[in-house]
Length: 289
Image (tube, rainbow, N blue to C red; front, side):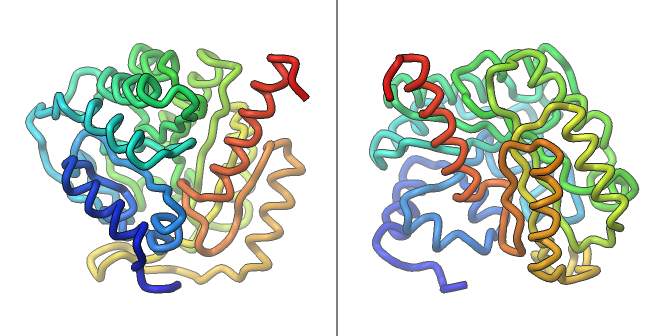
């Protein structure tokens, strides 16, 4: 991958700093940051840069924010999105177990503030599991977000090794199931990493679980070790294996699957598919060819 540089990259970086916004692109050391930022897209991370969970694959800072929430974040986000002239954004979040609702109301406020200033905007929310609490999921699902996402991250047998102890495979699956139950007309989305030591049977079982939960969009990518203190890579999965998983996933009924070594949960191919699908549906509802 090319080193991140260029006018758009520098503009987004400066804007993010001026408005005191965090991006998962930087916090998680995403390898696609240069490509995405130069294309004028970014994934904003809500509720600060400190997560209350310490997953062993993730480079985001962990700690206890003590209930602090930036009340200006919805307005700052809306200003940033409007200034950048974006048509589709992804809003992700740190887990906030220190908040009674996990930060759901704040996430919904950010979504609605962004849409209020950019009415044609499509928003994807990549949320935590909210401990599968229906009230929190309901709050986000009833916001203006068009895509509701939550990442499984890995397979059931590897969950306890890979994710924080407060994270749970069944809670993640239930969160996705509830998102679709609450908002059946919205797209749901999830992602898993390969190369952590999973077996083919493990991956296949996860895909089937996700389809049972009626998840629409799936992304599969290679786990990359962000620092020496994180989990080591067990295997570098060959691109033809990723392609085989894409074919199998779509045969199971996923509307779209992006699968490849550098694919991430917030990935331009998946976002372009979701935006295109949503806008085509809007045109069909309006009776426009």
